[in-house]
Amino acid sequence: MQGAWSPRDQVQSPGRMSTLGRSSVILLTYVLAAIELTCLFMQFSVLPYLSRKLGLDSIAFGYLQTTFGVLQLLGGPVFGRIQCPPILAALATLLGAVLSFTCIPASTKGTKTDTQTPPPGSPRASVFDLKAIASLLRLPDVPRIFLVKVASNFPTGLFMVMFSIISMDFFQLEAAQAGYLMSFFGLLQMVTQGLVIGQLSSRFSEEALLRASVLAFIVVGLAMAWMSSVFHFCLLVPGLVFSLCTLNVVTDSMLTKAVSTSDTGAMLGLCASVQPLLRTLGPTVGGFLYRSFGVPIFGHVQVAINVLVLLVLWRKPMPQRKDKVR
Image: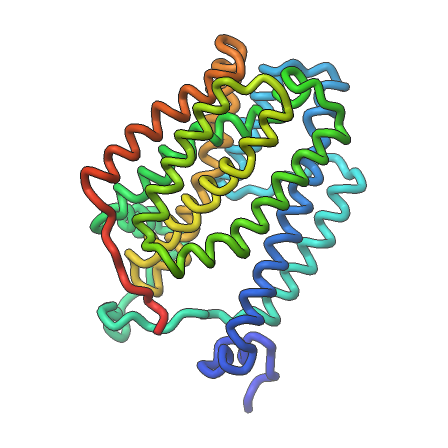
């Protein structure tokens, strides 16, 4: 006797993508990501002011950020005391989970022509098999692309981790003003990732976009070293957002193309682990640099690291691969 029909059965059917439509899936995924990030930054925006109100200094707040990064890196959910924002975030996340389960196909990619499928009856790797995950980093060109991703993100990650403290101490912003600034930052990210990068990727190669993002990091770093007011920061935010979004989109694309279709999810997980890694190391390193050298040091570090990355990219170009989706 056949079991009851479930939404997952239809999701896993080969013709599901043609029924739902790729554009609808992309739109829904974009909405879900927007909901999740909105809820996350609702809490981030008030956390530094709440910490300062409770008597925490910059070092203690850095330890708090490090704790968050470690737990995020390990994948463990952290539940704090119930405030309005956490409740709203929990409800929105639950809604996102329901929509993901019922509307997103289990596989949105076609098969790659040169992908070797495992023989029938072969043991399936466990999702907790760390050796299988680490083996992805040993594939051709993957270590270099991943290193570029981490290295170029590191200086900006340091600055963004410390930004809440910088907005209070250096820019002298109130909570509402900091919220407006973060909204401006988020709006630029949405426009850049949703419109600008798509247009640029149709006209330029991934290698060219990657070099452009690193070069933009260098220019923004130079401006950041001379930054003295929130107005100056607003002027350099578009360049910072462009370089950050372009770098992450291009490197994610390169890394997922470097692996088989079945390993795409694992590779995306490794890509997503970069930000938790920065949140783990960033507060301690960033707090020390900020206390010792002030805000300009973040610009100096950004210039130095990305100059080295740019030299590496020009010395040995990144490989160009075709899409796995036909």
